[in-house]
Amino acid sequence: MPAGGQGGFKIIPLYVCALAAAIVSVLLAAWLAQRGINEVNDIIDPCMRGGTYNKTTQICDCSVSQGLFKGDYCEEHDCQHFSVLTRYSSAIKDDVVSLYGCRCAKGPEKRWTGFLCNKCYANGFGDDDCMGDCDGTRLAAYNYTRPGHTDAQITPGPAQQCNKVCLPHGSIMDCNQIDLSYDGICNACNGHGTCDAEGECVCTDGYFDNEEGIQCVEACVDENGDPICGENAMCEIVNNQPKCFCKEGFWDEPKCDVICPGINPVTFEGEACFGHGSCYYDGVTQKIEFEGTEYDHAFCACDATYIATGSPACQWECPRKPTVQVPCSGHGKCHINADKDNVECTCSSGDEQADNWYGRRNDCNEIYTCFGHGECDD
Image (cartoon, rainbow, N blue to C red; front, side):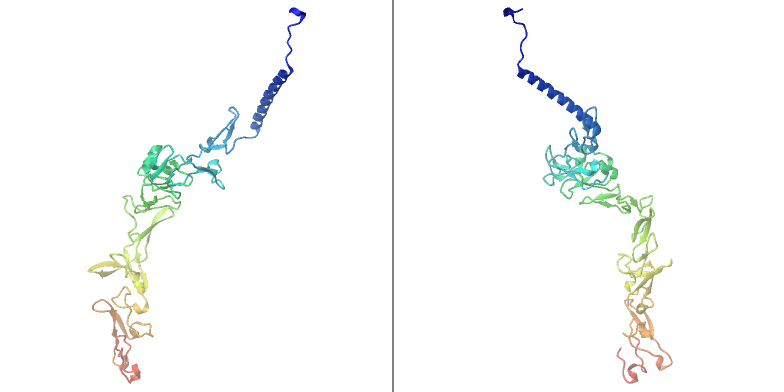
């Protein structure tokens, strides 16, 4: 026993005991709280924006957002280069990617595009810069090198970002591979068109868009690539088959090479029957000379006052009395003149004076005109 007869025990101050108790209490409370949180997380999914809770790692898997959201609970977004997270009024599909997107900064100072606004398809690019002219060759920088991406043309979209792509050799599958902003546009010409200055497909002759809007895929050409319709025909798809329809003034599908009288057979300009009759075709044609060459023509059913022998196109109106809707006033025959540049009348004649008519309009008769007491001035 130590000197003085006192034992070896030390008295621990009360405040030290209190501090130790407090630390233990805090640790215990934290352990219990964390255990409670984990148990709650097993019941209630803590993940935001479509994330999936992982019980092992106790964090959320945000991969369903395709990189748009991150963080333990998918609470952070990854929109880049001054872009803004946008929530649409309603989802196009039942998934988070259809409901959210990054709205990229407007160009032309900032031409960023892509789902996360991290793609630069302009020729002035850097870590934080994307400016200058849109450049289709920039697709290769992001490994968009499929054959359909060849000769790509990129033009500014509505907000002046480089997010309007035209692929002359590409298909919709090639378009779907390219990362564009939520308002990006990709036109695929499917190998049968060219891209104009606005980034739109211009289909080559014989090809056009189908009913679903897929561009330049329906063809009106044969196995040799030649058009199945004539130059005066329009081609449309009917019941999934190409069909030729003649333009107004032309007959005989699919070539539509039978011309209505009144149409210039060289320039194909003009109006059928000169607008004074109805054009018809029943398989039989007539030869009409034009500038020294004869061409196959359909027929005209001319209006009453335009019916004249030798004038098959209803081009000239026959002379007549204004009050009579009959050629030559009903007293003669209307026919083409010797110069073939107008029509004229040949008056009726007979043994009786009443049968003899004269005048340019065939409306003069010595008995009936001027009551027989004057001279007809026709």
